Amino acid sequence: MALMNRQGQDREADSATEKNVAESVFPDDESKKATERAMALLLHKDRTEHELTVKLRKAEYSDEAVSFAVEYVRKYGYIDDLRYAKSYIELHIGNMSRRQIRQKLFERGVSDEIVSEAFSAYEETDETGVDPEETAMNLLIRKRLRGRSISDLTYEEKQKQMRYLAGKGFPTEMIRRAFLDGRDE
Image 1: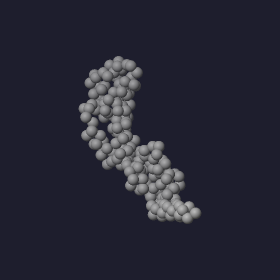
Image 2: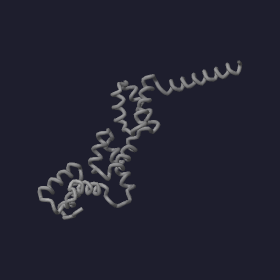
Image 3: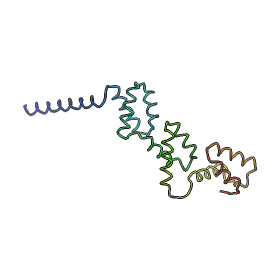
Image 4: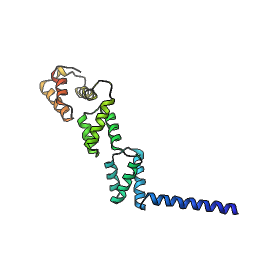
C-alpha cells in the first residue's frame, strides 16, 4: 500500500511539474491553442510567416495569441521564410520565370530582401551552366507550339507568343533570341 501510494504521489508531482512548465511556456490557454493550431498547420505544408499569421487570424485567435504562436514556431525553426523561398525557387525555377517566382513569393508574404538572398544562394549552388529560366521558357514554347516550329509561325503568331512569354515574366532579350534570331527549339 505504501508503495502504491508513493507511485500515486510521483504521478501527481509529475503532473504538477508539467502544468508549471506549460504555464511558464504559454502565457494563456488561447496562446497554447493557437500554437498547437500553428503546429498542426505546419505538419502538412510548409508555410511562410505571413501565411501562418493569416490562417491563425482567420481562426479568430487574438493578435497576442497569434504573435506568440508565430514567434514560438519561428524560435524552434518550424517556419523560416528564407528556407521556404529557397525551396520554392528550387522547385519552380525550371517551370517559371524568375519574375513570376518573385511575384508568387511576394504574394505569400516573403520580403524582397529574402527573395533576393534566396535567388543569390540558388545561383551560387547552380553549377550546370545552363540557365534554368531559358530552359523553362523553351519548354513553354514547345508546349504552346504543339509540335510546330518557330519558323512555321507567321509574324502575328510570333508576336502573340512573344507577348505571352513577356506576360509570364521572361526577359525580353531571352524571348527575342528565341523568336527573332531564328533559333528553332
